[in-house]
Image (cartoon, rainbow, N blue to C red; front, side):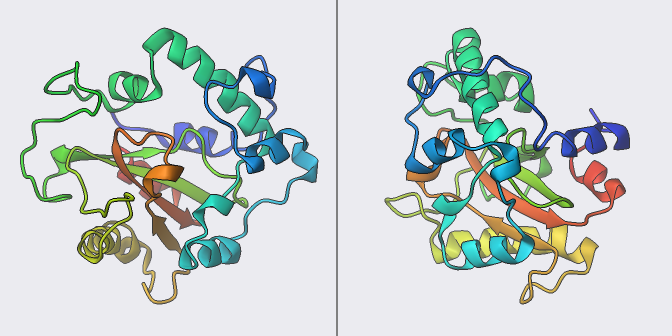
Length: 228
């Protein structure tokens, strides 16, 4: 189902609104909180400085992905949302599969989903991946969109879940063709497009293969086309 321009614009405006779910105390969190999470929970949005594009570029280049932060209000909402989702769906991956991706695992009883694919090579067939707006983006400056590319096919990673050079090359070719070329971005300068894949220890949804793409000042028409 296509996403219209109004829906895209509405989604992008939610980054640092006030919580709409009942806030939970840290002790009620359904997942372990990091030191950064606790720091953010002690802040208000007015005390938070959003990530600028240059800061994001540096964090990704230096592989300091643990430094990426959400708005304080988003952390509170995420705790409440995760609690509700786990009660209804048992897990966040189960919710994403059922409601966002609408993919069916070959064997639902397995802890890590496996899917029937048209082509085992990542990004080779559009039926084997999907682009979605990140429902819980990092606290980025205005004009920065956060897309997640979900894959049915696993990427080539090492024992820690870090992309191998082969894996990086595959993702980079996909990002170049899908995002950089339409935006006229030079891959050496990264003025409009950045991407990264969290290692396993940093992933909140490790059961499902995915890559993060950050885009600066993309036209609504392109965002709608990508996430249709």
